[in-house]
Amino acid sequence: MQADVVVLGAGMVGVSVAVHLQQRGKSVVLLDRRRPGEEASFGNGGLIQREAVSPYPFPRAFAELRRIARNRSIDACYHPGALPGLLRPLFGYWRNSAPARHAAIARAYSTLIASCKGEHENLAAAAGATALLRPVGYIRAYEDAAAFAADLAKAEAVRREFGVNFVALDPAGLAAAEPHLQAAFAGALHWTEPYAVNDPHALTLSYAALFARLGGRFVLGDAATLAREGAGWRVAAADGATVEAADAVVALGIASDRVTRRFGYAPPLFGKRGYHLHFTPKGNAGLTRPVASNGFLLAPMRAGIRLTTGVEFARPDAAPTPVQLRRAEPVARRLLPLGDAVERTPWMGVRPCTPDMLPIIGPAPGQANLWCAFGHAHQGFTLGPTTGRLLAEMMTGEAPFVDPRPFRAERF
Ligand SMILES: Cc1cc2nc3c(=O)[nH]c(=O)nc-3n(C[C@H](O)[C@H](O)[C@H](O)COP(=O)(O)OP(=O)(O)OC[C@H]3O[C@@H](n4cnc5c(N)ncnc54)[C@H](O)[C@@H]3O)c2cc1C
Image 1 (tube, rainbow, N blue to C red):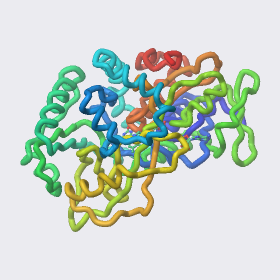
Image 2 (cartoon, rainbow, N blue to C red):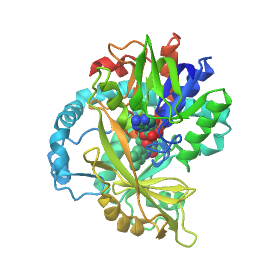
Image 3 (cartoon, protein in one colour):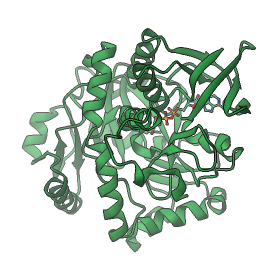
Image 4 (spheres, protein in one colour):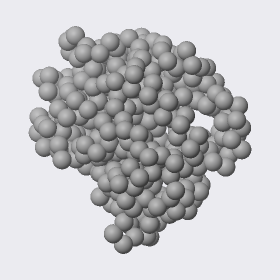
């Protein structure tokens, strides 16, 4: 099977890259070991985070570090045995989270985030999936008045510097916006610009269907079989066919460095795992939009109220340990009347992270015709279409619509 480009990985990022290349006249094969959108892009919070101009920093305050070190919190936890293997990337993450560096990183990141809504709107319109982009924003609700005041000040700074909108809600305003919330909240921030998608898998599938309508081909196969074929590439499909292409794009989420390492590029990618479980709402209780509080997210999804956890650090091959879900569930039940869990086993996904909190987008160092599109951490669902456009422009020699230099692979 011949193609101009083989895109490895059919999560939100790979599917979006494939659509953008196919739209530009390239013949593209999209390859994944599973059907499209079944890993991290499947079970996320569904937020298209226009407000996330500033990537999540590593905590620097001593009290915060001590809280996390005790390993009992809802928002972050770790397997002690995983720490030695994570020391280098986490040290880099900590260093890059120093205020001056983090501010510079946020300025670069904000150039990607700025286009996330428009780029999703374009793909969703072409895919007939605009209804999935619910323009309701999301709410961050605080039971602690001091935490609310601190985050309000940060939100005001974000609005001043980046022009992102939000509304500060007092308890009455929050009750009017989400009448079924039942805890005594001190206040809330309603980020009004994000889209809330109530079926993230359906959105990725709709972009994959658009790719197929444009003439793109999807094949099952293992990206580990990628090999040089002259100046180009070949990779084995599961049905025994061989895909040959001039260019290859690595968009394998957390598995990306496994493939790039074989071709001399070993970026310090590390994972932040997260879990979800759906609950039926009790009686007529419900949410209009996702609500983040106490270190987890409650999002109204087609499958039920999705309780999504924060971050867990573990070895790549460690079995799931959904302790954060167990800690979060009683708190979630205090916030919202929840019925039974919909699934027996929680879903787990891995956010593909880099020490400087920026994704890797562009040519792989030292390997002609090999391209990177990974490392989108907490916002890969948000940024897939933006990265898709940027990389397709770079690969086809168009002027990139965003300066790609902060995201270049050579920085690692
Ligand atoms: C709990 C949680 C909540 C989140 N909430 C949000 C949110 O609200 N908003 C947001 O923007 N982001 C969110 N994220 C982050 C987001 O989900 C990820 O950044 C994003 O899905 C990454 O997309 P991707 O395409 O890079 O990777 P993936 O979706 O993981 O896709 C990678 C693909 O590569 C394939 N693959 C891997 N290895 C091989 C191989 N050897 N051969 C063939 N195929 C292979 C996989 O099958 C997979 O389909 C969340 C993540 C988690 C875990």
